[in-house]
Length: 129
Image (cartoon, rainbow, N blue to C red; front, side, top):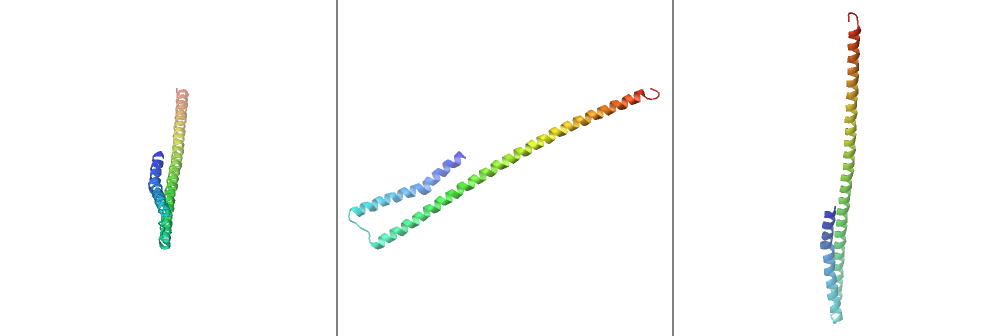
């Protein structure tokens, strides 16, 4: 997952940090204008506030989107781990069953050999033998 984390971090940097850095630059520029005596009109101030709120909402939406993706990736990763564990468990069970079947066959073969030996002994000691 380390590759996914690096991609996630760079995507967050692209989607969140860069726009935030741009906004900081604009704030510094506006502050410089305010110091130099250029004050915005109330309409400009209201428009700026609305733009800022839209940008904040967009950044929050992007952050939530990335959080959702991260949560989905974790869910998928957990599901894969669980599936792998189930598969390993099933493989172990199959292996145990095969070993049990081999032991059963050996025991059955051993009993068949004993029965055949017993029959041979009985025939060998019977009447006329």
